[in-house]
Each structure stands twice: as structure tokens, then as C-alpha cells.
Length: 91
Image (cartoon, rainbow, N blue to C red; front, side, top):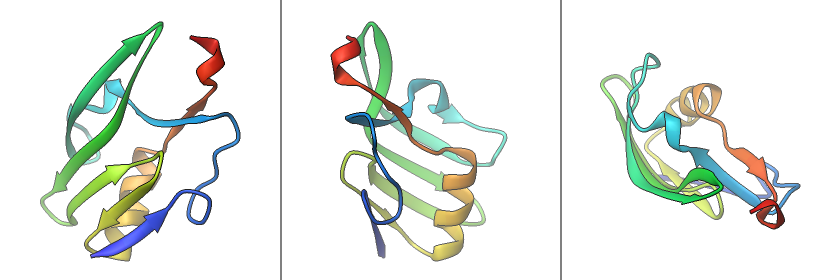
């Protein structure tokens, strides 16, 4: 597994760096994503797991790190499911 880190592979300028809750389930990108939804004015997902029939599995948290099977899996996932950035002060 490869490790992708916040601050190295993606930047966070606002405090919160999360996956959209709308991304859970089966997506047209081919990724099936699961995770716990948090709600407090916004809805978001911190820790998540995702699988793809061609790219394999990914798991992690955009607040910290993501574990991926291959660089191609990371590129494809990040293209279709990048982090949302927002401020915790907004809730």
C-alpha cells in the first residue's frame, strides 16, 4: 500500500478537509465508498473506505492520510472524489 499525506499530496487551507457525504455508495466513477456521516450544519465524512473493480481499494481520511494500492488508483480516486475544504468555524 502507498501512503498519501495531507500537506504533501493535497493541501488544506481552511481547517476541515473531508469527503463529501454525497459521495457515499456507488458512484459513476466506479468507486463504491463507505464511511460515517457527521452532521452539524454541514454533512461530511472523515474516515472512509472505497473499492473499485479496476483500481482496488483505498482507505483513510483527508484530514490525515490515505492508503492506496497503486498510484493509478490514487489518481483516479482523487480526480473524481477530491476533498472538500471548509472552516470548522463555519459550524
